[in-house]
Length: 341
Image 1: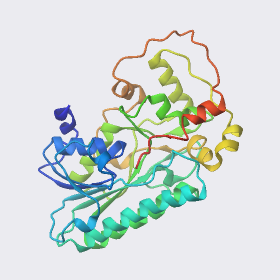
Image 2: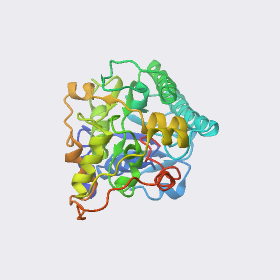
Image 3: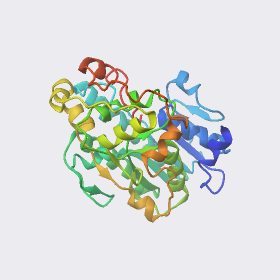
Image 4: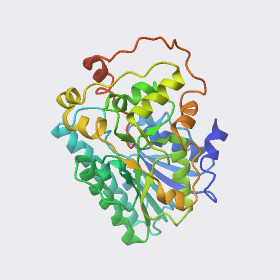
């Protein structure tokens, strides 16, 4: 497992000193494992010692960036910290936490970069394809604009906070993440329940987790990456296409989605932006820089995420629409595994 993880960051040319925020999240855990396994020097920012104990050593743990000395040597910062977006309704308090958690940590990262005697060469700061707002079938690249929405406001503020590091000579990459798919987060159909609840036509610009770790290593190693970079697979799918691929792999019929009107009534703007809206986002900058995805299509990625073997179930299993309380109860307490969190 360690050799497999280490290979994910093989693009890095030599031993790197990397600071990771959000290291205990779904993405961060795999990133730290890959870096540590490959012999890189990893510093992790977290206040949760219990979650930090689950990370693969060796790494240095700090609970505050003030604990890092001015003369510390850091080659790269990967900033993934933020309140999960899909584990509760977007009430006023939840919205504040989503926004403030991202800005607080990013501000602290920029303050660290400002006082370091030798600033890091690169800052990869998380963002989301939510920056683009809600679209129909239009394809979107890093050169397209965004539409007004709650997630656009969050991501725009988050990206602007990260860009302040540019004045210190640090190359800043704003990584616009699509939903990140991978093993270890529970059953895939529960972890991705919001996309199965939607209306069918909305686009899901996903990325497989190991491909994302490989892309981040590629970005650190390649100075061609600057500014916004889409972290999405080359072949996005619609909600209906996603459901079909899961059904084909598991050899069972796809369940029809809940009515959009019911979702709006129960979950408001959360439903409108995460479950009923979407973006058809393409990774133009990654393609131009020569990055090769191992999983360009969802059909290719599913064996890696589900253990490589389709689940044997009767194809005559009854198709039914889940009851609203049952379906939502699987989402709202735990939610979609946050792309950044």
